[in-house]
Amino acid sequence: MITTNIDQAIDALINGEVIAIPTETVYGLAGNAFDEAAIKKIFTLKKRPFYNPLIVHIKSADYLHTIADDIPEIAFEMAKYFWPGPLTLILKKQKFISDFITAGKDTVAIRVPNHPVALELLKKLEFPLAAPSANPFGSISPTSANHVFNYFKNELKVVLDGGVCEKGVESTIVGFKGNQLILYRHGSASIEAIEAKFGKVILATSNDKTPTAPGMLSRHYAPSTDTYLTDNVIELLKNFEGKKIGLLLFNKAMNAANVIVQEVLSENSDLNEAAKGLYAALHRLDNSNVDIIIAERFPDKGLGKTINDRLERAIKK
Ligand code: TXA
Ligand code: MG
Image (cartoon, rainbow, N blue to C red; front, side, top):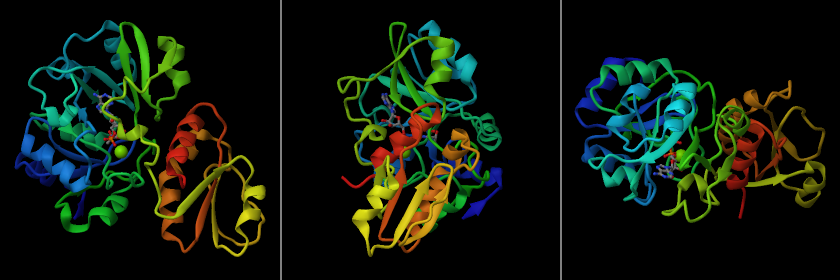
């Protein structure tokens, strides 16, 4: 059931249940990170394979050492700069952190979400929350309580409603090799913002990513409608005469035959605004009666990189 009653959420979590919570990025499917039974429930509900590790959400950077060990100085500095906010840090785990959370790795993903409801919840709880995005494995992430409800219906006793997510795409995930920053997932903290303050970020190699990170899977964040990504929408449309088409566009609607729905993400060409509306637009397109979705490629800078990354994984392979 969708509710704004935070006490109900607290009761459920203390009782070992899994609930949906709002964050500034996307909604999460949250459970007590110190309760292995609750963690297993998250995987079952999400139909997520156990090789995909979860993010631990803590109330402030002061609690980092309760989850992570051997924390490099630069990680503290990044936490101080970005938290609460959409940056997840990959750090060496404390021994007692469950292998279910980390998928057996010796590292753990941690962040402090920047959402008043999530923060209030975390502050009232005596344990951190393990939470993946609140969507069935592989599908489009939810950015509203309704998106979550449509996926899980009454399987979730509590969907805590915190409104529409302000950022709209998941957190950026960064790990460390000494002082070198390693990017595990593009997200709503832009690479430019990280590099301006903390120096060059390099892409994780496939070695760093074992076991496979789900955010890195080639098909993920995917609508059930066949989806294409292109630099030239008009050209691609020629291949689909007679089909009902939905378009996902950056800043301008188009005049074209067979197009029955168009989603324009930012008339002002604002990539942050586009990111905020991305998943909701994909949900609407997927629920409209179109045969295919065509998305145009976004500018390769700032959150445009993150949008392109998600669209690459949403497309028909
Ligand atoms: O914005 C977000 O990060 C949202 C909200 C709810 O906080 N959460 C989210 O969780 O996107 P999820 O489970 O959908 O994605 C978590 C990502 C996965 O790609 C996973 O592989 C990666 O974090 N991850 C977790 N632990 C890791 C680790 N030890 N090393 C590398 N990647 C890790
Ligand atoms: Mg996810």
